[in-house]
Amino acid sequence: MSLKGKGAVVTGSTSGIGLGYARAFAKEGANVMINGFGTPADIEKERAAIESEFGVKAVYSPADMTKPGEIAEMVATAEKAFGAVDVLVNNAGIQFVSPVEDFPVEKWDQIIAINLSSAFHGMRAAVPGMKRRKWGRIISTASAHSLVASPFKSAYVSAKHAIAGLTKTVALETAEFGITVNCISPGYVWTPLVEKQIPDTMKARNMTREQVTNDVLLAAQPTKQFVTTEQVAAIAVFLCSDEACNITGANISVDGGWTAA
Ligand code: NAD
Image 1 (cartoon, rainbow, N blue to C red):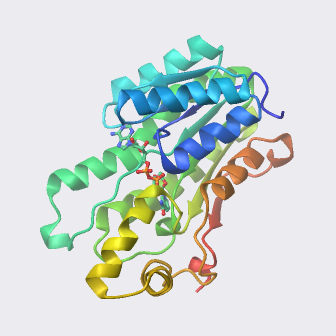
Image 2 (image 1 turned 120 degrees about the vertical axis):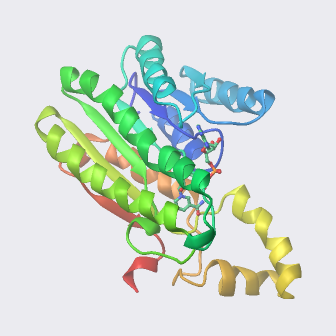
């Protein structure tokens, strides 16, 4: 168990990719702070499952990633609960799709706050402890949209490109302190969110399940396979290993060849 006794904070980990990271770190022995929205019963079920399956501490923070004060408090609470925040994963994110001229201003602000600024606030709070201990791992979930654009996603694509720049900057600042800072850029990941879109799209476009998957959802993904949350989490676990100590400032694609095209 490579992360035994370490403390990890994963933002946006009540579902999807974030929950995948939290469970993978716990499997490696880390105590984890989960965060995000959802019904209290569902969140408690996931939290308790992590503790009982992996024998680690799991704590829930309700911090809202649009609120800098709550982000700092989340990091401070995790430091108290686990003794340290050794691993910080900036993962919370939302999407909104609209032509730029109609894009609601409050949606732009919200996406920049959750998908970008929250990572800055988290790093700002967690880096001092990492520097003192001379060890830390910071990982952000970027996206294929940190490298290429799609129309109608101005806020999301801007935030994801900026995450890659923030990653490089903080990697340079912390390189001599045993801290690495990287981002992971998935293509389409199989999450409940994606699964739920299939029946509606089948109906709307009069397509079979296979046609929706290959010609709509995976149109840009040459392998014609969804990335899984386990595949993304496995990269994060590797980035936390000592073998990965010279990988810093990197943007690691896991997109089935999307950005090779
Ligand atoms: P998801 O909707 O399953 O998870 C998003 C998480 O963020 C949830 O836990 C949600 O509660 C939380 N969240 C949303 N707003 C929040 C806020 N204000 N404060 C705190 N938590 C908040 O989506 P996902 O697909 O797992 O996405 C996770 C990350 O991965 C996002 O940054 C997303 O941009 C990125 N990503 C997803 C895909 C994909 O295909 N699913 C591809 C590339 C990148």
